[in-house]
Length: 119
Image 1 (cartoon, rainbow, N blue to C red):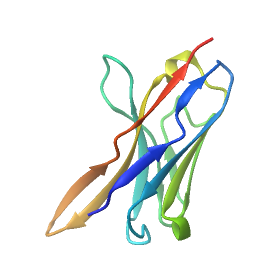
Image 2 (spheres, helix red, strand yellow; image 1 turned 90 degrees about the vertical axis):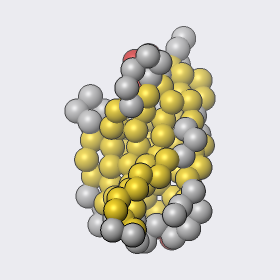
Image 3 (tube, rainbow, N blue to C red; image 1 turned 60 degrees about the vertical axis):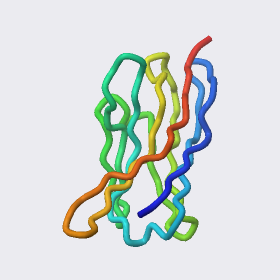
Image 4 (cartoon, rainbow, N blue to C red; image 1 turned 60 degrees about the horizontal axis):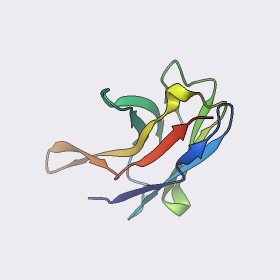
């Protein structure tokens, strides 16, 4: 198991930047892939980006040129640097860690951190 706590969200103007953090309750050295997802009001949760233990990243097409995911395994933390933010980036951002245990995969989620992009 793992508990995930996101932080860093808030209100930002269009074109601005935010850095989100996801702190895990235990070592993430054994969690191969961690990711960020988001859910806008009235919409389904969608992938933002993922990163493997080896540093391989994957992004949603609409975010790959503006967002950067990274992880600091020594600090048990995953980050999401968001630049050139747009109003359509407004959403609650969630950290995700899929873990294989007892012969099954379980998705662990944080409580989310809200991001509002507005002038």
